[in-house]
Image 1 (cartoon, rainbow, N blue to C red):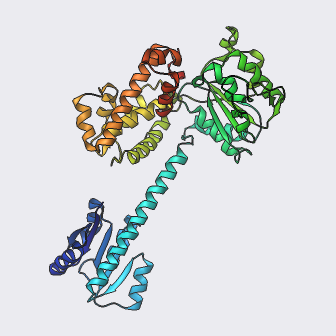
Image 2: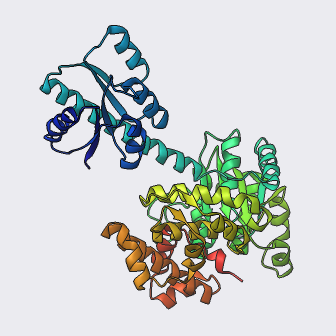
Image 3: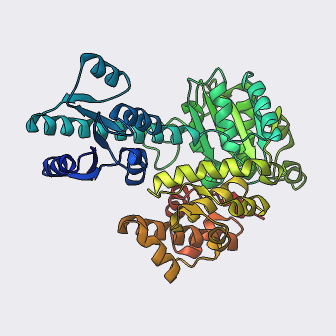
Length: 464
């Protein structure tokens, strides 16, 4: 990556000299400017890294330029040159954020050395900014986002519930953020220092769900060559989150009931019970009362689970949060896919607010992600949002739009798009039955589950 350097001096001969001198260094791209009033605009439009500016200039001097650039972007590195330097002027420049203050005539080697050090420093600041942005996004990935009244009420309820140690059942439609709510409870609880173990119940085959949850002893079955702790033990002193608990078999429900009531369980193949201090938070997008009527869910287990209920609101109940969520996803995926996209048009925001979101926040997230991948403009308009769901991954439109990124990114985007659509269609066909879907796809169940985890595809989204 080339370092962009802007030299500013009211004398054209001085600008030409500095451009030749600094431009002789490999990796430097040097721009020149004699009109100091255009400094901030030039820095912004050309993404300049380092500025070398004369102090004494008509109209706008170097000190003023320094202040304006620092107000615009604190990370731009500024070196000041002057033929009439004083100690007081140097001190003032450094206080205002100048990287260095050099007096003319400047030794060429010293100037080049200073500019190279300034470029290295600018690179450090860039890497620091990228790391901070990455950390911010990773932390936000585990946070609920919203400022609507319904979300404020939800946050208050979560804070109240987190202070207790009771079992919590989180209900709500697919894509409303049930796991994020569980993670927030964990973060605000006295168990925050302990582990948070999330279990996607439908993704684990019924035949091994019990051993995954409670562990087993050596010799419990043919391939049990050593003792193994289950997820309940792994979550000791913390929280275990049982996602889509309505899909677990009755046999496992019985054992979970005892674990909830007695705080103990027996690993597979063991005659002794294991005591464990763990808080259970569960979620479901089903009406468990109907499953009880159908004989598919134990009523005593339901009443033990349903000590405290938190219902996650659908996106249609919090339409005013859509611009906030969209802006967050825009920043997140623009950064991920290295796209310079600044926002949405007013028509695009209105379109997002009017659109029906059956998949709630998760569907909104995927639409914004696809829009960013295919967008060629700095502003996402209504047309690309309206057309995005109909894009054929093999079409000329997609191939043309992905030409704005490198080949590897374009290829990965295309693979992700095809895989998501294929798995989504096959799960829709099988009503979310992973075993049946794997059979139709000609894949091992574990291979299909691996792809589903990789692309954050949830079988519960496709159950009738």
